[in-house]
Amino acid sequence: MLAMQYRGPYRVRATQKAEPEIEHPNDAIVRVTRACICGSDLHLYHGLVPDTRIGHTFGHEFVGVVEEVGPSVQSLKKGDQVLVPFNIFCGSCFFCQRELYSNCHNVNPEATAVGGIYGYSHTTGGYDGGQAEFVRVPLADIGPMKIPASLSMDDAVLLTDVCPTGYQAAEMGDIAEGDTVVVFGAGPIGLMAAKCAWLMGAGRVIVVDHLEYRLEFARKFAQCETVNFLEVDDMAIHIKKMTDWLGADVCIDAVGAEAVGNMLQQVTGRYMKLQAGSATVLWWAINAARKGGNVSIVGVYGPTGNTVPIGNALNKGLTLRMNQAAVKRHLPRLIEHIEAGRLKPSEIITHRLPLEEVADAYHIFSSKLDNCVKTVLIPPGARQYERQLAMH
Ligand code: NAD
Ligand code: ZN
Image 1 (cartoon, rainbow, N blue to C red):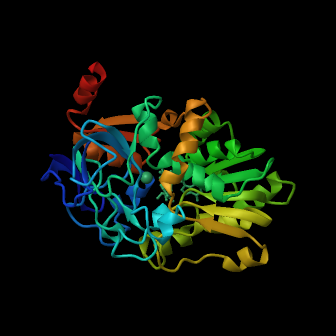
Image 2 (cartoon, rainbow, N blue to C red):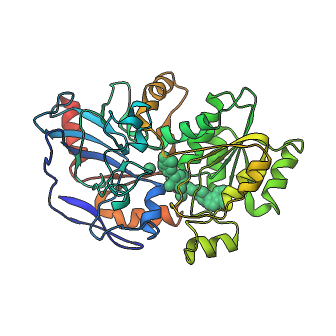
């Protein structure tokens, strides 16, 4: 089959690879019809995630059609159209019972913090991802969801990560009616967090980035105010000025380890790897929040020490919450919002490329070219396959 394969930092290729097979009775093989590239994939692409092996196929945001199921699979059959949450989880361990699906204890032998993630290096289990014609879906009775007829495939693929992650970012901010919410990052996750902040009762939403095209996108998509951090001397003081000198009730980090805006952080965090990523947005979020406020972090960081102003967080009495999103927990509510017309996740898709052009697709998204916000890859044959399905 054709699959995206990692060749080393900044080098990915679409080349032939053996098709996945059923390895366990509860596996399914899914024929992928759409797979997105995520900001998280950029951390892999930039060579920042340890144990990313040559030949690994990325892709944790995908939808498709069940091609084959293992003998114990009961909830899916060949031909079902499914969306597959980016987390791989068992559904029954201590953590899954508490709906902490991203922290499942049974699916990732390499780590004690994060569970399994498709296409996200051997630090999250080494599972091949969905930027391919076919993907093996373990625990097929637990993770995947049949796509309801009310959902378009484009909306469905954004329910595998972006939309639930933005939603959880807002949820972890514990937004109260009328709160001022500052979202750092106007990528897909920040855009969705801004949109969801309104759904949770925010009175004011401010999105921060330095890419003018993304800030413009944010104003239209999420009807928010925006700040270009390049035009501001001190981010925390600027937010305080905008909030009667109190600070924001809620700050959301939707940027993570690759934040720009502070050269020292960038050099020590990104280039010299002295810490697990640049802590720029953590500084801004902690210092721009009001005393007693909430900081919600969904931007991804490496596991080892970061230079974080934890003393300020303590002295201000902040509540810090963070996690990889527990996608499955949010799906019923998000589908209600989509069906009611309050949310249209697919509005953020700006690029569609055939899987064959995966190298270009990564380059465009990584370098923020061509006003790119979100890219969908279409494997060969997927369009034809969807047309056949539509005819039946
Ligand atoms: P993206 O790369 O498209 O967007 C990141 C945005 O942050 C860019 O627009 C960039 O210009 C901006 N930025 C850089 N430095 C900044 C700064 N100092 N202040 C404000 N903005 C800044 O990525 P994305 O797909 O939106 O993902 C964002 C983050 O969320 C990534 O770290 C990704 O790994 C993470 N993520 C987490 C989860 C989860 O479950 N927790 C899920 C998906 C993605
Ligand atoms: Zn993702």
